[in-house]
Length: 289
Ligand code: FAD
Image (cartoon, rainbow, N blue to C red; front, side, top):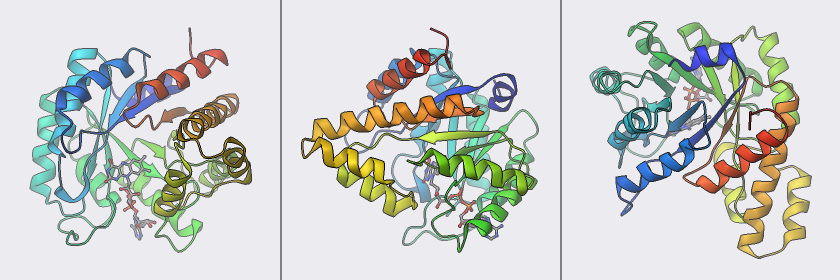
């Protein structure tokens, strides 16, 4: 089913998986998808390895399995840096053949040796995908604090408006740790006439190192309340991870109370994160029991 149709009907809850790296067999990803599917998400998104590296073909296989084996809607990510139109068309053809009709159209992060070929911005990919017709539902990324490469939040918003005009159907946000940034971003979207449904993306921090890396890689700010919480829990990795899941659940409950279009949990191959998020959202009445 098209994700845009789900978003038009209700507030959604979704999860994320990434294809196996290194030695992890594909079967493990199928099993993790199955465990996540048991929490009845509106969809599970499957990330894509940018620039033609590694295991990107597994994205289509996992997305197909989510649809076929678990009866859950899949959102297959696709990045366009380094890709040709023919690469993209072959990938979309395969997805549609497998019954996957939702794609998250992304540029991908820049990496050495991977330049623009047929696409410069994600909006170019969105416009290209639009030619597949209305059956293909196209999502795009948005950035509550501005994209890390953008000169200003304003220029990031202008780029977002171009994605909307190119034909995107819905937006999924970059992670953020301060809900106020998301609420300000929603207002900014209105001022920029961005009318697409916006799904708020929440990722639990798992350690001090990981949250520092995320902040550096994607420009998400770390609020004082998170720093204080991490200081309080001390050096134990298990305590830090537990605090991260608790904090993410508090963010989700607050977002649910503030009328978001949808909630996306960057559950990063951890069914236990999906379960904690699900329970918190049932507890606050956002999801049915
Ligand atoms: P774009 O929209 O092209 O934006 C990139 C930069 O160009 C921004 O600074 C923007 O302001 C600017 N820009 C955009 N359009 C224009 C224009 N027309 N004119 C001038 N400037 C413009 N990466 C992966 O590799 N695999 C994944 O599976 C993946 N999943 C993601 C899921 C979500 C929800 C998010 C938020 C990010 C994801 N990423 C993923 C990371 C993403 O690839 C990076 O954030 C990347 O740096 C930008 O991607 P984009 O699609 O937003 O690019």
